[in-house]
Amino acid sequence: MATYTKLDQIDLPAVSERYGLQDPQLEPLNGGAANSSFRVSGPSGDFTLTILDNHDLVSAQNLATYTQAVYRLGVPTTEVVPSLDGALITTLDDGRPVILKKWIQGEVREPLPIPLLPEAGRILAQLHALAPESEGLGGLPVGTRRLSAEQLDVIPQFADREFAAWLAACLKRVRSAEADSERTRKVAHGDLFADNVIVRDDGALSVLDWETVSLDDPLLDLGMAAVGLAAEDDVLVPERLNALVTGYQALAPLSEADAAALPLEIEHAACIIAFHRYYRHSIRFPDPSKSAYHLKMIKFVESVGAAAQSGSS
Image (cartoon, rainbow, N blue to C red; front, side, top):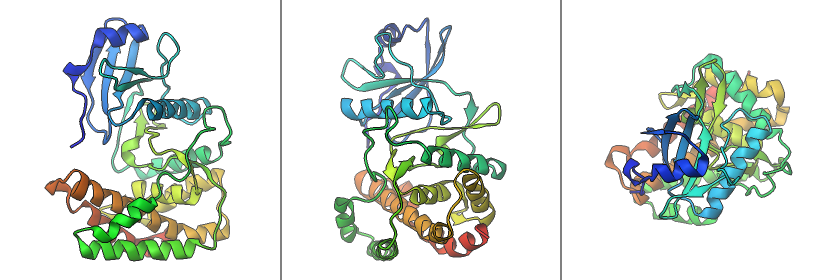
């Protein structure tokens, strides 16, 4: 399994000195698939301390820079707190990168309530409207949420042959349909799922986790948000999809062609999630309790047609 940082591995006095924190208390936070996060509280305020266990210094710096950039550009997210010398990241004694962010008071609600889905859609549209050349965003990678050539080559080797065949067929259908479309790349979140959305105490939303931010097709990003926010019991729910898309279109109206293509991009997003679930839970970090998670995406894709037609009507 991945190596995570434990509470007793953190030299809290050293971290406090770097950030000028007074008498901080440290509390582990649940969740997080790639890093270790802790709540820091004390007279200096409340913060989230994240140890970027699976990052090197370059990727950690990029993540901090992108997070700070979207915050400063008005997207509701957390603010990165620089160290006293102005650095957006510091390191533990063993070299693991550290990022400190202001605490957002609120909670994750899964599923996100339907009345809040339009706001989630508006935030996504707001993100897509950012100029990619804005300060802090100039080095964004392209299409990081898509499956790479190397990942596609792995699919025929999956032990679950039936799933491999389904996934290959689904991706082939998507790529064939996308061949004639070329949408302008936008700043994309790539992982707008409920566990990356905080319902703040004032009822508004904040979006977290910019690990997968990139320049990509905004319709695929909206499709990924539909997978993450518009499903219940592993099927796409028309009312939820309609609420999400209505909020998105309040800022970024979809053309007739894009509205017609959205179901395909939802399927594309579901295929991407299916791949990562299988690869993570059945190959990289085998976990019998999660070994069937990828199969939920088959059920989801089967529900897309009817739900999308109803949701976009």
